[in-house]
Length: 78
Image 1 (cartoon, rainbow, N blue to C red):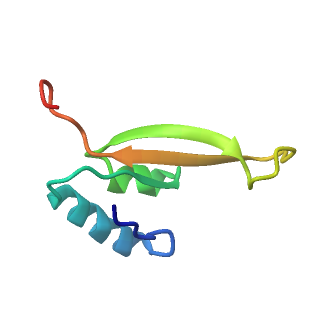
Image 2: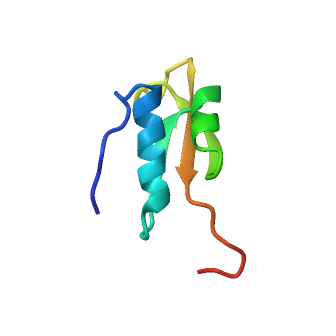
């Protein structure tokens, strides 16, 4: 499995990454900040919002909102 960090990309770079991911034949999974622009860029993908504590400290008081993004699966496909 390959890992690529897209967190430092600007909106144009993320759109380019979305285009490349759309052309992949394999499985992939991406997590990014849950923002309106990210949701718009990956509008053709399945999106699952996730809320977690900020950082690894279990006592963190702030929540961090992420979006789990993966390709949509066609009905009947495995």
